[in-house]
Image (cartoon, rainbow, N blue to C red; front, side, top):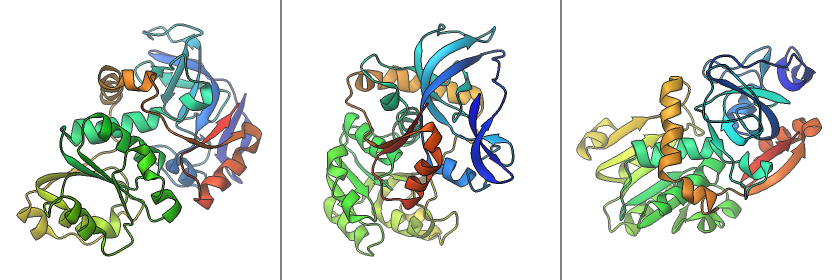
Length: 322
């Protein structure tokens, strides 16, 4: 089968053996894949958790049909239309744990379904489970113009946030954040953004920051968070290291929580997917929670899809179809 593999000459389409499902695995006939930032790093040889390096089939998000079941797989049948996340997604067939997938709603095509699994699982866990957002609270999404950021704002609105603030350093993207739930859009590269947040919250700061930037904005985040507020560290697009004002952190009694899928067990990931299904799935089925598709590429042009992502001028998801 065809797969997009990182090898000695970088990432390229290669013929590899079709996998077989074992245990709780499901074999998926892939119809569409969503690109993510971590994929871009792995096309350059970077490692993402335990994934990456020579011989890696790239990709982590897909939509397709159940082709075969492992002996212990439950909850789906051959032919079911599904979407999910996991390694080795950029291929004609991929394997997925039976607890790490969703049934794709009948009113979505494969391209649309492929945009959702990572964003839904990541941001429900960040905003609701770890962020503990309550109705009537204020939230700031740092890096709001990414696919997961757009989903975070929508989930916050769905859960009753009274004020949703989104950040983006790009003026065009910033201008579109209101389409996805932002009441206020700020530029995190502007030194005055904290004052804008404080003004919008009556001088108190937000109850929750979902941070995908980190690095140099760490202390600004502390200053923009209210006393006894929460910061959930999801991504580090602005750097993995930065100055941190421990005194301000203590004075505001902020809960600072780090999250990643890279160190979670399969049991923990199954629970996250189950929480999405039990809490917000009606909003997915009704299309209240959805992501825009920036551009669709054929699998043969997957290299061009990554070039498009690296140009960093898109809003929404980049999708590859097989």
